[in-house]
Amino acid sequence: MGFTIVTDTSSNLPTPLLKENDVSVIAFSYNLNGEEYICPDTEAFDGTRYYGLMRGGVVVTTSQINPQRYVDHVEPILQSGEDILFVNMSSGISGSYNCAEFAAAQLRVRYPERDIRLVDTLGASLGEGILVLKAIECRKKGLSLSDTAELLLAMRHRMYQVFIVDDLMHLKRSGRLSGTAAIVGTVLQIKPLLKGNERGEIINFGRVRGRRKAIEALAQKYDELVRGAEKQTVGIAHADCAEDAEYLAKLLRRSHAPKEIMTVGYEPVTGAHVGPGTLALFFEGDVDVRSK
Image (cartoon, rainbow, N blue to C red; front, side, top):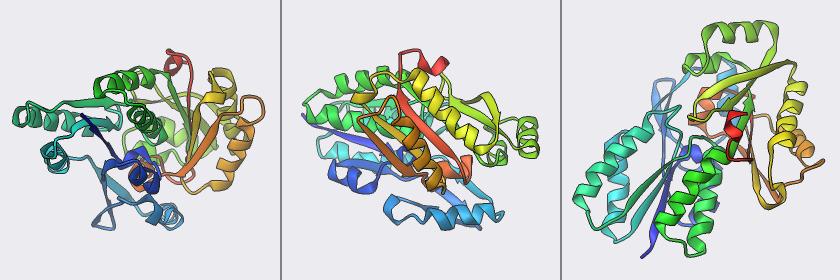
């Protein structure tokens, strides 16, 4: 019996890859200048224009996926005889996971013969997307839905997610950082080192002065915490700062070169919260790496 992998656009994976591997994607929505948009195709997203608008003062707001949208999206899949593996954005930064749980509960009643499993990745962008890649790999190898879900639930605790932002005020506006910290960082050009903790929440665990040193600090955390780099895909996500992403990738290859580095531009919804100039790094470490 087969199963369908379902994720959301926060997983930030290239659209051709998702289509090639039959991954179903639910699009988050965002509001720009009073109009609601979705971005189901990352290849069509003009990040330079979008983040340019944000730099110019345009405020983008977002909304979570409600339970009915989940139901409408996946019910046809269940009707076709497929089981479902949801790979979702962190519950620590969005209420969408709880909405997915609510939708799944309804659908289990309607389709008791189907198996529906949810994975709270405790991450976003490629912190979520790399788990989707693992789910694809497991399915190709013939692993069951249950075994794949259990593997992802274990793997999420090994995913280290660290990033820097160019302007802390975007995180302040979306409630991800305290107002005081945002103001101090903006005035003094102090770059906080941010990460996803054990609960999938964004926390500030350090700070450096200056952009270049902040990028080098990301690479230093990688050198310190990565395990089995030669066997894994490492992720870099950026919000219209491609040159910084290239520099970070160069630093990663110095001593612990990974099997592959996947670099993507932040999609608009997650990007609205972190803001233009954000640079993020995602890799696997020890099982307790999220606490470090």
